Image 1 (cartoon, rainbow, N blue to C red):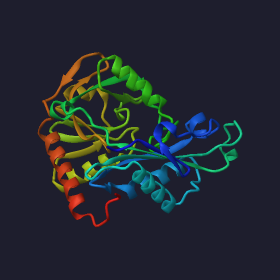
Image 2: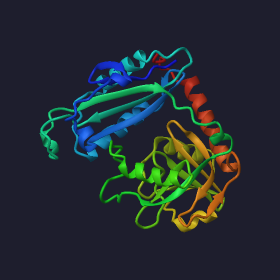
Image 3: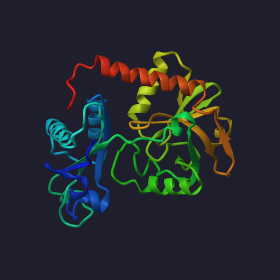
Image 4: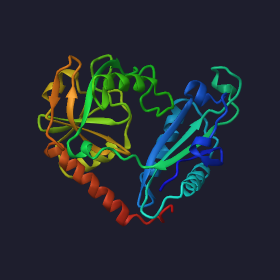
Length: 302
């Protein structure tokens, strides 16, 4: 069984024993960037893409990451090894770079050096019912941060906006939230991208959301298999006409949605286990992962 392990600047220990200084800017201000990926048969999936997105996030907040790619990769490997996965067990990896510590001051130039924090644990096991039937979403009154205030492509450590939206959705009986921006355009869920089928077309909302790597994979699969696809703004008034809905993320992969609660409290219901296009995307994504394992020439990490 995979052990939960933490690595703070090279000090590896059980996750419950891992510590960062209270003056760390990631703790004090959410001044950090991070990525999450998982392995398949011991192979890291989309590691390079995640690493490049980490660098982009850092650039967007003016952070100079002191750790090299090789240092980060070596530390991740060591942390995965310390989690002691058994043969056939895969792991979830979160690696985070904080701006480090220094005087208790908002000025980022006062930090001494970036700190690396790595968490390895078992891959989350989502309820099978969420795949067989579907999860439930609720559109929240709480709005997504404006892109003029905080670029959604900064995958950073401050998730208060998302946490508050998720809390609202849970109070309304949903598994997750769908957040709108100030112009009533759909952005994303709390930590995943959301998709709709509108007028028999796969639609990926483009307003105020993170460039998800699973989302990017689905776009490529849809394009390569001639599925009807549109990447465009989606207004909340369109949601009542949605024919299908699903979410994508590194750990959820492609998860169908059964119900969508709109802002006025009305419900939109979808087919159990996803409609035709949702099931096609789920199948194509599963095939892609199989091909990745079969054709990947890297050695497994463990």
